[in-house]
Image (tube, rainbow, N blue to C red; front, side, top):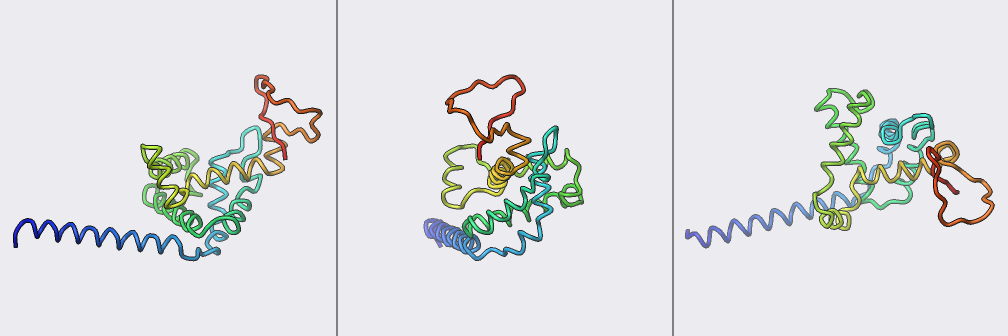
Amino acid sequence: MNRRKAIKNILALGLVGGAGYAGFRAFELHKEANMASFRAKETLIADLADTIIPETDTPGAKAAKVEVFIISVLSNCTSNVEQNLFVEGLEDLERYCNGNFNKSFSACSPQQRVSVLTHVEKSELYNSALLNKINNKFFGVPFFAKLKELSIQGYCNSSLGASKGLAYDFIPGHFAACIPLKPNQKSWATK
């Protein structure tokens, strides 16, 4: 066998293997997601959201029941790809916690939780914004980006988040496009 033929065979084998993996990955992401797994992981989702928006002088995400919002949106308003990515992300996060801390995410200390979420966020993002856009376009929004997005939406749209976490003006007097905030003033919320 000459060198040219061997290189062709290696390239062909690499292309077939890469195409096979891409096809398998596409099939795995597009299959029907197991919705019972979302409800079974409700406490984990609540702890994740509470780590993102902790309780301070205002109520946190757990008090605002953000996990119910996240599960509802994932169950009813997202594609199979994003549902599967979210389930895979939850499983990867639990594996990382068990491997590094020998306990579940819910049993971790607040510092360990923050370090886990920092690791997950860094592992999902590329150094290039263009590669992140391409990844989002073809494979859907990554787990942690979707978790942060839904946590913030759920908190800001909840009654506790809008009234206690933000400055809620139930009946605004007039429209002012740009109002400067005073020191320590909360951001405005409208429903």
